[in-house]
Length: 327
Image 1: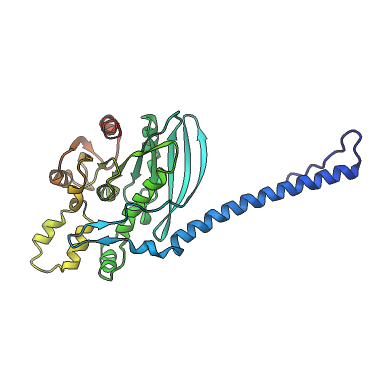
Image 2: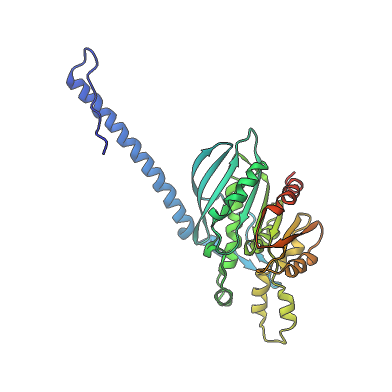
């Protein structure tokens, strides 16, 4: 452990005066530590209050008779804390922000720029953490974009039965909260002076692509959406073949979590979809079916080969489409 250095008397100064100066210095250092601790505590308490104390916001979620989920366009000033790490060519922020009944962790990468740059929110696929998408964030920074990736609640996994039961009981399902988490992440990005608040899009991968499409559809301020290795659920076919076994309330719930339900809400924002031809997780036919239901503007990129998620073969088309979407 490092030893404390004692103040040495300056020329012509007594030992008593030196001790007094040392005591004052120690007091200032202690006060600085207290202020830092208080600042951290205030942020932490604010996050807890936003999650547990402000219960009125939890009732602003709604699903209409057609199964369209909605949240307020004005979601208030986001509550979050952050720690910045500067690296060559960009700034990396570790972020925690409050969203509904949870605190969501995120990583934000902002290129070093003399002016605000467009922003991109990334929603990973199920089981993929924010750290697992840092390669894509680095590529986007190289293209000149700020980008933030979040740890989705449940790491992007979904429980249809549990969520259906919650909806039947009039409670907010986790899949709906995950859409709100994405919307709140966009709110956080808009607080950064290095990001153009009017020029933010969403990239969603696999299951994250489903939440991305819904979030972009219900918030018209989002500039557009890119779905990679994703699709809707084609719930309408299930309902049509049901023969009366699904109740009206179950129908509302199933429609509310299906991106296909929200496609008409996207225009004039653009839907971009990219999919590997031999994707064994989500077959390309399902992605094509969702794409066919969407209105213009839209574009679909089938990519030769096998695999699931983003890969280098998509980079050129992704850069071109983001350039158009965030111009």
